Image (cartoon, rainbow, N blue to C red; front, side):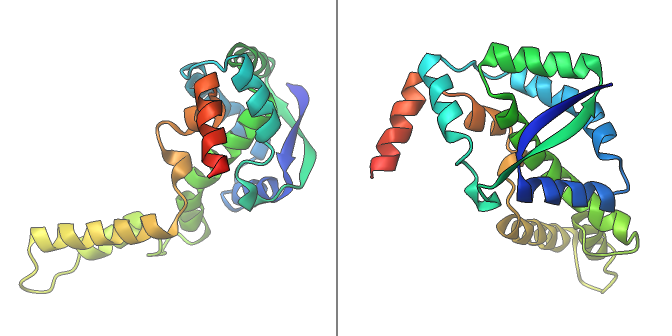
Length: 193
């Protein structure tokens, strides 16, 4: 295992650590197991061009500022293979490693949320799967499958409105980490409006 340090948002790091603790998982072990899949996702996005790389280095600290703009250095232990692959792909894609880690923490926190609800209290009915089960197990007369399905869709829509699920989008890494001259120009136009 190799120790490395990443620059992370204080609030995001605290939240991620709290979710790991609540899920009874060891943070560095989880990162070591989960990062390879995320590195593959990074590998699949277009690399930044010269202008995009400069832009990303300049703006990534300000993006997603709802998590604050205060940063800290955080040590993590990764296997030599994972760390080497992480460094290699970030260099190939011209993405600051810390920006990629920032995005992965956002994604991991979103994915752990539902699991943590259940781990904290296995008999809960607050998670989405349990809510769907409650609807499906409703044995009142006159409720048909179409009504069950509509109720489940309503439940999902309600959750979608209250959760921030951008991190679960298929293009999350590309949207946040792949910049070209064209995307930079578009961002500058939007910023000037």
